[in-house]
Amino acid sequence: MALLSIDTAARRLRSGAVSSTELVADCLSRIDADNARLNAFILVMADDARAAATRCDFELANGIDRGPLHGVPISVKDLFDVKGTVTTAGSRVRDGLVATADADVVAQLRRAGAVIIGKTNMHEFAMGPTNEDSAFGAAHHPLDDTRSPGGSSGGSAISVATGMALGSLGSDTGGSIRIPAAACGIVGLKPGYDELPTSGSVPLSRTVDHVGPLAATVTDAWHLLHALRGKASLAPVTGTVPSELRLAVLRGYFCDLLDDDVRRAFETAVDTLRQQGATIVDVEIPDTALIAPAYTHIVFGDAAAYHAHALDTMPEKYTPNVRLRLEMARYVLAEDYVRALDARRLLRRQVDAALHGQQALLLPTLPIVAPPLGAATLQIGAAQEPVRNLLLRLTQLFNLTGHPAITLPCGTSSSGLPCGLQLAGPIGQTDALLHHARGVEMALGQ
Image (cartoon, rainbow, N blue to C red; front, side):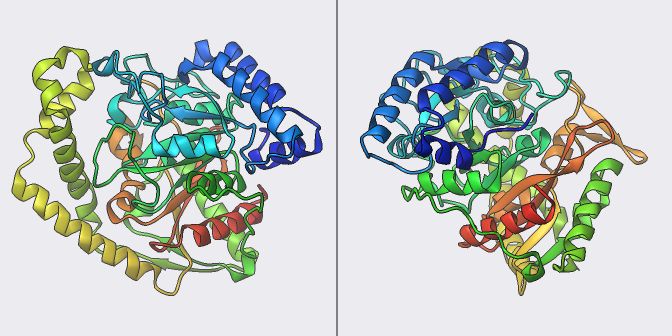
């Protein structure tokens, strides 16, 4: 299904070819048709969205233009406060906790004229990459409802991939934007650490959490990012000419453990870029063995501290798997946490070194395509690997180091499931990364 992009919708709204009321009606129709099967939304804000669309149409008709999101339906992961609604974080632990104000990033979306269409399903408290452990039931992949859409922002990815929304707001602590975006065949952007405020969102790890958009295209991600910064502009991202791209492929750990279809799609994309004139070299990160333990000790330590009171007073309200992981998190030692912080600083220096002289690092987003729901392990080569570890394997490094990273589609598997290609750029250069990602997107014919 060809998706209507934010960029195209913005032009059509201004030409009078479509109204915000019509865009919202189309999204709500898609939700009515598919949400019962896919379980993308926890809350559909139909009446509020229709009223907001009417206001947007009135404003545009009277010369008030808030930018490319004006009148565009956007979904919000149910980790963020939306005034007057319960922020569930996918959990019964937060029953009845109605937000009294919008999260800062939600307020920015409203100021940019976005229409909030609803709040999306997620892995409980963002504590997993499959979107299976939710108090509201598992979310399902839009191309195969026996498979996971990825997580924890799974509902957000489904909403964009199916046209239930034209873009979405997600969070990313170990890959929670990029994992479901790659699994569902869309674009997901994790900006640099602390680039967008996390205030008004339920934390997983205050020192690793990132906020960012999910979208149909790199240009749409650009529009969403700038709106979230409070600097909405109709100017699109200009892609770097392929012959001017300087990219470093992360080899070793990042390409050692790949599904055959993913490897084929990734290497085909790298070859295509080379053929179009991109300069591509191979690099490695020396201490990749530190990534998973450093990530686990920091995130588990932060999560255990945040959830301590609820675990003591209402443990039965958590889903069993998330409760188990949080109980395990309480055994992280202070010395493990401090060692993990040291490892994070080392890994940041090593990513900086790999980027020296390059515009971006290039690697697969996921080593597998969307896994079957309920699968604990998958066969990769001769080994059975845990699904959770596979899904986090190639994304969590850039949460630790704070480098901006983006995923975009790069082909499909033999069964037609999407594969994702990931670019990571220097800290403080998210806009430049989007220009390079747009260049890659054009080179790959997307």
